[in-house]
Length: 380
Image 1 (spheres, rainbow, N blue to C red):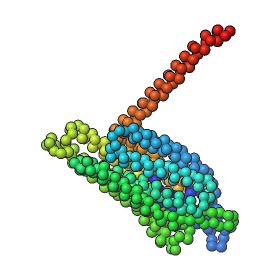
Image 2: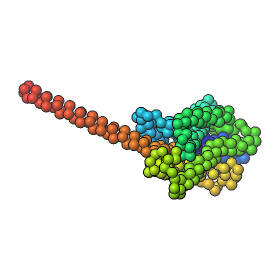
Image 3: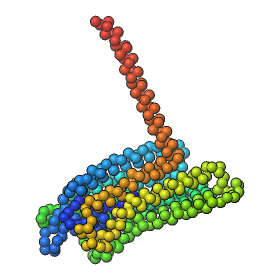
């Protein structure tokens, strides 16, 4: 998922700073320039080899994420029955595409240009959009977790799921926008002239003291990672406990509400949900935890990172977090039986139509050849 409070700084490398990629509200100008002393000239960042590799991988992930998520939308659009699960998947895909079309390209271009060239208004607005995109991914994932919990623990309330999910999705998108508003006020353009004209989109001067900056970072970190993680773990733990209890029961009356369907279908559905939930939690934790742990280390012990963490590692951890955007359509799409079937059906239908079109073209060409051939003979 991911994330970078809501998006890490450009990731261009400089001589000594080692944690600049981990703090979207951090002083980007200070962290991207090596301020060795108050009266000494800062060393400006450069487009390093590590940054070049990061750009290539980021654009590659952008392409993969675009194809995967558009495939999800394509398959979902062909479903006549508008289920509440489909609505959740479409919203998650929209959030992933927001990250794909905003976070990834801006990160890559910012690495290439090294400094910020888009102006102050774009600086504020794009920082808002980037954090909003990251929030939306996290919050929609939480909504999906809550929906799965309700579906397993309270199957009789399934009829209320569409309305409940619409409300939760509205809250999720509204909160993602509301919590991102501070970005437009703390980010701004700062320009230095020595040793050269250099402009950066940064929070330099927005915080009076360091603890204020740390407090804002922790606030964002909590809403972006800790709270969603806690909710997901709680939901899927309750699902796991419920399924375990149901599987250990030996004598269950066949007329109980949760056994309205066949005995074989319910266990399979629950096991499929359990498997999906495990992949959801594991992918979220694996992709983003390393990046955020390094961020926490940088915020509280910035001096300890100097010389201990390579610049390449910060690039790798952020890219690894972005990889979660490519995994989402696989997890939420292919683990859903009906959705997976629809995707295969659409692919098969497209293949058949392509074959029919090719056959038609070949047939038309063949007819034209047969018609022209005797005409040519007559002319000769």
